[in-house]
Image 1 (cartoon, rainbow, N blue to C red):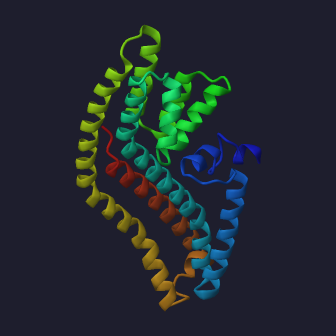
Image 2: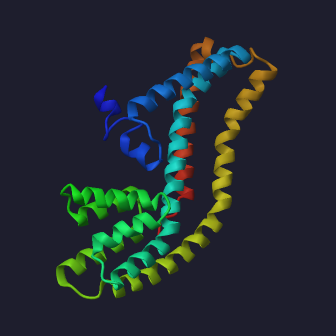
Image 3: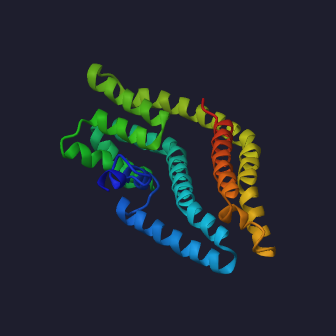
Length: 254
């Protein structure tokens, strides 16, 4: 049980919840999802059919996972959007003579979430003995931000060889602004593909629910007959493969 709900394992691990901005432990969130699955399945079974109730109950954990992934991606997007302003604050602090960590702490106080949360975590981790380079690298990994990783590398190089860190960050800021413009173009071009993928994923479930509502016994073959069980398993497998395939197509990395 501990491995299932722990920090590094299980469907709802601590890192995923933290990155999604959920202030619950994995155990608490798992209990919440299990309760929601039971209630949704029961309600669906009473209002429609046992098949729909079962499908809704099984889909609830997947839906919770999708919500977490959406919140995580949204939080990372906010972090990237705030990064240009964060760098300007860092540059200003360095140019008035503050140390790197003091500048990061000041930027944490002046920034909005999630930047403030991540910068405060960096400061707190260094105060308890964690290396600053490692703390910044971990934050970049949590936010999946190549731009912030560049900032950490610039800080580390400055610590090793010296130089004008503010000037280096000024150049990094220019590069990040150019990358942000490219990202905006990519999002615009991929928006249609994402919408098509969402519709195609929702269509089978929506059709099944609609048919079950207008003719409650029509889909009972899927839960009453062995051939129906096989068809259900194959359908779920193909649904999962198709969803994964479309997610790879619309997810552009550069």
